[in-house]
Image (tube, rainbow, N blue to C red; front, side, top):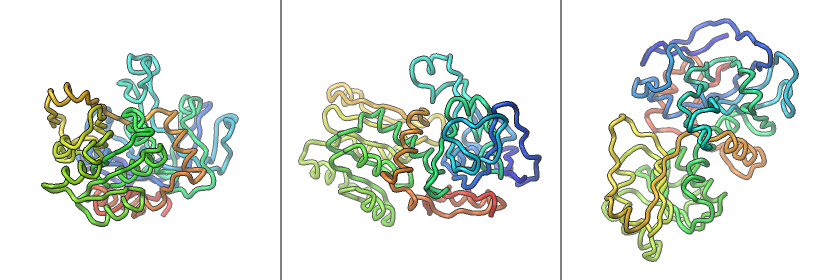
Length: 347
């Protein structure tokens, strides 16, 4: 088979490799679509090193078909069936795991990090991941839609932690693919009114089609427009969907008493500071929450919404390049000019 191996930052080569050998309980998957996450971009460029083991095969957002198993298939899975894959294997024993935060387990292993990911023609799923329900059937949708379940589950985790369900107002700052996912999830979760901010007109147009009631370009008067739009009450939930401090600071004055701020996006650079005046947090009783990856339960919930068509996601997938052009796919994703870019290993 062929796979794109990252030997070191900026050193990715498509190479021939033996097909994975299965141990008892393992599954062999034929990758259909693998999408490029912003984390993949940072790993490729060397800006993210935590938990990355070189050489590695990137790609933790992928869909695949089941082609072989070393033992009986679990209920719900069938040979030839389309699946999406929850990428994490937490240890189950650390403080994070025992306190219901397995997605931030410091001992976890993950596809695209320590385990070879979806930038390959075949992927082996270890028996333990099969047993834990990491492989989720999702027949009846396009492979691209199945692959986008993973980032959508991450967005759902962020909204769950920020208490978005049933909120009166939400502001999504940044309307890239993840920001658009947040808008659609907010509608699914019953948020009454949604505003969105992005400098790119085309993205604001898609944000409106995704369910945003108000779309604005960032500028000196944007926060005041948002505050006026709420009738002076302020925004209940701010979702930071792009890793830039100027996606946060200008809108603090538009937050409602008791507001929640979801720092969803990853920021480049370990030392990036997000400054929120302490007294603003104190006197307004704001809650600031982080969000990293998702729990397996989040993944299953989102997969169900995609499978039934309750969440429309096909239009969030952009250019899909052959595996031989994996570097070009990463560079295109880094440019921000497209929707969710990916590779099709069999093209």
